[in-house]
Length: 381
Image (cartoon, rainbow, N blue to C red):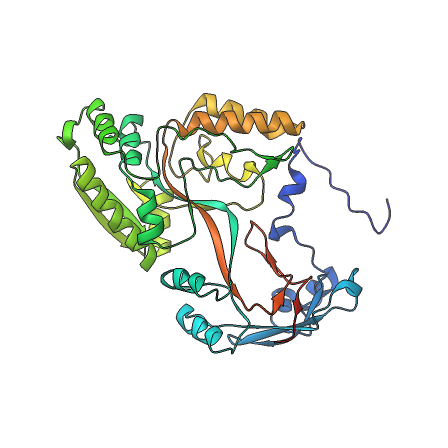
C-alpha cells in the first residue's frame, strides 16, 4: 500500500462497485479543507478545493461562479479552455433569450416548446441519451391495480408518441419497460432485442379494452374512478391531463387528477397513499443495479409495492454475479419477467437537450447528465 493507492474492503461481493462509486456522492474531497471549513467549504472560492481540470476562482451567490484552468490537474497540458463562467438564470425562457442574443455561449435547459424550432434553425441543439425512464407508478398493493390485466389495459391505452411529440415535446424514445437502455456488455446494449410486451408507440385501443374486459370490467363497467396524482409542475400536469383523456376515451373509465407540492406528493407515494402517480427514475450510476431494486420486494425505492419472489431471486443472483456475460443475461431475465407484469406505466426513455454555439467544440454530456468541459475549445467566432 502507498499514498497513491486507495483500497476498499467490502462486507460482501459487489461486482458493480466501480460503477457504484462513479456516483457523485463518492467524489473525493480534501480532508484538511473539510476540517478547516466544515459545511461552508463549498460557499467560497478560497475554500472550494477540487481535483478536476478547473478550479473555482469566483463565486457570486445566486448569480454566477467562475472556473479557471487548474494548473495542478494531472492532465493540465491537454486542457485548452482557460476560463468558464456559469450564470444562474433560473427562468428557462430568459436563459434562451440570453443565448439567442449572444449573451451566453450555452444553455443547460431548453424550454420544451422551443426545441423543434431551435432544431429547424440549426441553433445548436445537442441531444444526449440519459440513463433514465419517465413512468407512472401503479400501486400494485391495492385493488383493482393488483391485477396484471388491469395494469396491462392501462399501459395499452396510452399513445406514447402523442405524449412525446405533442404534449411534452421532448426527444424521447417510447418505453415499454421501467429499465432504460444505456448499459453495454460485450458491445451490445442489454435492451437490444428486448420484447415490447405487447405494447406499442401508439394506443392499442382494442387490446386495452380486451385486457380490461378479461379483468372483469367490460367497456369499463364497474371500474372505480382512477385517482391519478402528480407533483406540481407544468409539464407533468400536461402529461397527467393527456393520460386522463386517453384512459377515459380508450377504456371508458373515469379519472380524477390531483396535484401537490413535491414533498407532500412524494410522502404519499412512499406511504402507498395513491393509486397511479407520476414518477420516473434517473439512475444514480450507470449500471442496471441502479434500476432493478425499484421493483424488488420491500426495497426502499419500490414505490409500486410490487412483489414477485421469482424476480427477487434473479436480482439476488445478478447482484453478486462477477461474469459480465452472465450478469447481462440475468438482467435480461429480470427485466422481461417483471415488465410482462406491467407494474408501472412506462412512457418514454429520457434524453437531455442543451444548447451550444457552433464555435464551441469538445463539450460532451454523459448518460448521467453530467457535462464535461475538459476537452472544450472555443473557436474564433
